[in-house]
Length: 417
Image (cartoon, rainbow, N blue to C red):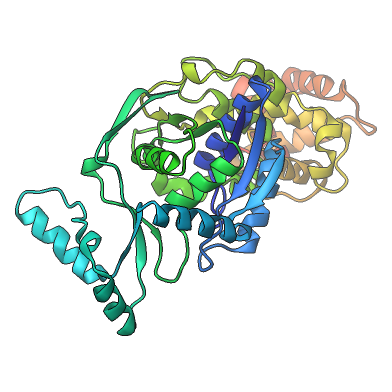
């Protein structure tokens, strides 16, 4: 069994990408298979090396590894060879229409109540017409001629699925500048890497029908497919509008723990509660059959709750390198139960060893002076707090909020918690 994760290095990985990557990795580990990483970087304008490097960094931070790494930009000769095979078989044909001409055709079909499917006008192009177009400075782009059939498959998540290819435009697979496009290159890569299972988002279902036809045209058996329903926000809206703020990079900078993210995403969209565990444990129980066919809701509150649990169980050695300079084990053990995000430890280190802003409490001035006078002399230990509070209760008669509220604000700058 071989699976792959194939992001385009055109931006930062977000939680939607991470969910797909994690599902592939867990599926491969559960079945004793191989997980491959492929960078779909044939677009020279949008693909950037810093994004490619960040993809590797973010996946490693999440705990994922891969059997091999490939880049589509290194495989242009393979796409050219496959294209020649399809041309020879009559499955690729040259086209010369401009985008304006295609737009006019679509609008005309819509006005007649027909679907805006490409009319295959270029299939009747003669050699003389092609030569004349090229002599006039035009360069062809190439479409794949789809079979006039219905493609069916048993989806690993969505169940029985079909795509009527008659209702789909023949896809452009090679641009006029010679650049091969995703729909085509992905199939060639999957064939060469002997990919057995493709796990990706539900937005690729129509692509799957088209690509199964390309697999068959190249003489290869299609892999099995599984499509995960897309993520929505906690209100049921499209998560895509918020993905810039949900990149792995930004979550990491905020102090989110990779174990919490993996635990949350591994069971998102299933009826199972998140399991805060290491990746091998998550893999042992991973089952695509448990994933709902409905959209999954990404709830930041649930992720924060998992992150809180993860932080509360971390020992000092696991976080020492990420704490403020000078922070000790005693400090970590004292404050970890207060944290939602590791980044919040900086504030508590300021409380312990730095400077904080405390509001003026005129009405509590006498009480706070009395409290300061009754504070036992250093060195302080674990028993100091209880002795001090007992003395203050006895001297002032204060309890509850009247006692702890002013002390909390004076000592930490926090009004609650």
